[in-house]
Length: 448
Image (cartoon, rainbow, N blue to C red; front, side, top):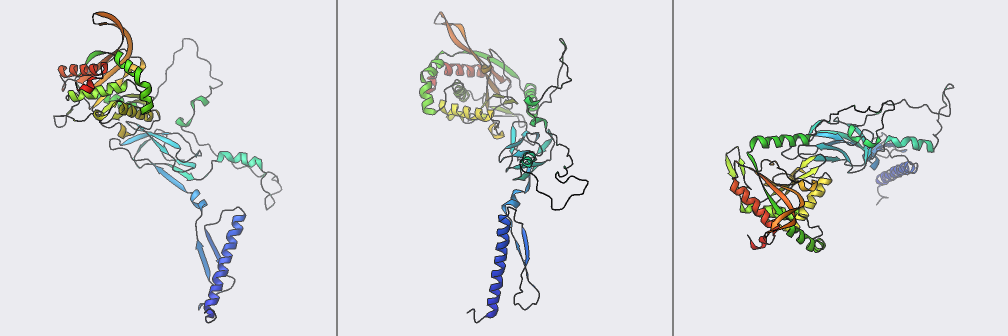
């Protein structure tokens, strides 16, 4: 068939010749170690037999992985939860720093938590678009990242390993031939305060030691979370008619229960048996028994909102402030479920991975000051809730038991409540219910 059509045969030969030329170009450039260009233009040595007498040029476009590796991307602020509108940026990296994929570049401190912003790919920070401490909203551009690039810090070490190649053109007589001219010094980019390690700071050599008796002071700006905590606590004092009632709990039985079953509990549920699960379960039992403590006043509509579910907030102290992650539907949980939920939320808090969704809601709060050795205290209500339970330290004290004085491990407990909604009868009954469950957990089985 090709013999019958000479024109088709010559056209096919031209195409094969062009393909061989393209292949030769790719092989030579790949073997030399240079990056293949993204556009090649070549001219055929012989024009094909087409009606037009003009020479034919063919253009091929293609992109390689090197083209995408040097791409510069702009990373934006992630979307916040509905209750959060803005945050403050704290940079962990500076311009020119190398980052790996998913490495934290900055943190955004909001009213409730800190949001970490990781690098979408490995590369080098090209530009910081927001100053350290600046305010950002969801979708605000934060920084520019050059994908796949390597920081310039490694260049001097590589340059000393191998001598530079000789220049093709001879330098002027006045300039030395062996040493290339040094590039002009560039101004160093200042690192953010958060990226500087405190241990690296050295005292100035001219600084004299402070004389005895000289007193100084320093000022530190309050972070956004601390400002929000102060605002909410003051709002609670101004809004609620807070009153606190107290009681004491004999921890002997729960001590003995934990001592007998802690090993079997750990083996089966892969989590330790603590005292928080007993108080959380006792609080859920008491909240179902006294629904007024689980209710809240809607100041907008002047209505009382009663809940048929129990979501308990557990106060956790972190270096940046107090956070209250929520354990939801506690009324349906057993001791093992509660311990697992507490451990999971505690691990998130230690890693600074708590999301706003983990702290939204909550119908009641438990604050355990006993972990710090507190003997007695009056907690402040966490608005818009109506009550908060304060746990304290366990200390051996002499108590009267069946007409005899015995040394027992005792804990003071305090309930602060909003007297606008909760009367003294409900508050005292609620606290006595918690005392009964913790001192004898068998009442849960009897539904008492």
